[in-house]
Amino acid sequence: MARSECRPHCYHTCLLVSKCFGRASASGRRRWSSSPPKRSEPVPIFDWPLETLRAYKPALTRQPDFTAFWSETLAAASEIPLDPQIEPTEYPADGLTIARASYSGWDGARVQCWYLRPAAPGIYPGIVFYHGYSGNRGSIYDFLGWASQGYAVLTVDCRGQNGDTSDPTVYPSGHSTGWMTLGITSRDSYYYRGVFVDCVRALDFMESRPEIDRARIGVTGISQGGGLTLAVAGLDRRPRVAMSDVPFLCNYPRALDVTDQRPYNELIDYLRSHPGQDESVFRTLSYFDVMNLAPNIACPTLVSVGLLDMICPPSTVFSAYNHIDGTKVEKEIRVYSFGVHAVVGAQWEEKLRWARRYLKR
Image (cartoon, rainbow, N blue to C red; front, side, top):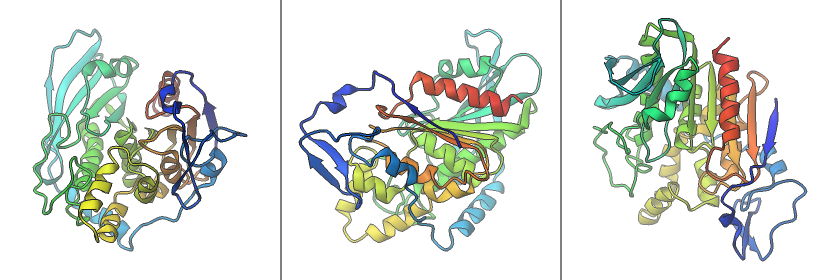
């Protein structure tokens, strides 16, 4: 199991301009000092030392019916007709076929996507891209490089966020601003149940295309998209490779211990306004905690983490990564010692190498 440690020089040094430097105690609560910690090896600005992170493998928070819940959910989803649609669109790029695409998701949603592939006839490996929180499927331009390298690309909207995919679900209770607490009073009504299913069904869309090699489909994403990448790999055996950057949706209890940044602060806002619901909220979240799905991942997995990431703290990322069984699948985490919540060029190049290794052979 390889591990890499990378130190880019241009990572938001403004984060370090402070009179106080946060560290987390073993209990997970912040403590503060007037000077930066002395480091035998890189440590986050507010989380645990790297050696502690590498060993951090908290107990899973799966409920007794966790596996049954997801088996029943995916079985119900499989009964929904996919109805994949393709609408070719003109775009000023040579050698590629580009289209608007859509398919039926959970609870009546129509998931909107971009679909790009080489124009020449042939059978191609596929990559599904999932986007970050409050984002969307992105611009066609963002994915030209992947398609030009011989991949068929599907880039997927998350329901109700900042794209063209609406969320038809009617939620039974109140919520804080954003999407993190929609339907959070129950696992059955929670927002991310629909999102996870929509993302798994992207694999169905790829398999519906005659030009896709079903044995060579990868999944990838950043932040929320990184969490969804790991979730899909944990829910479905079809991905050939998973490439997850600075993943969100990992170890919610730990996240709320060490960060108050958006979007985790939506949970804090909700719990502040709804005292006494802590136990039920964390019970619901446990079904959608990527850490609890990580042991199921059965494909080679590449993860990146920034030690200065205050949005998806390093300990939350490692808690999921460390539960991937490295004795059964290849896994690697690339540690960016001065990395914030972003992906640098070196990581994109590593993803290209992984995609070539697992999808081009």
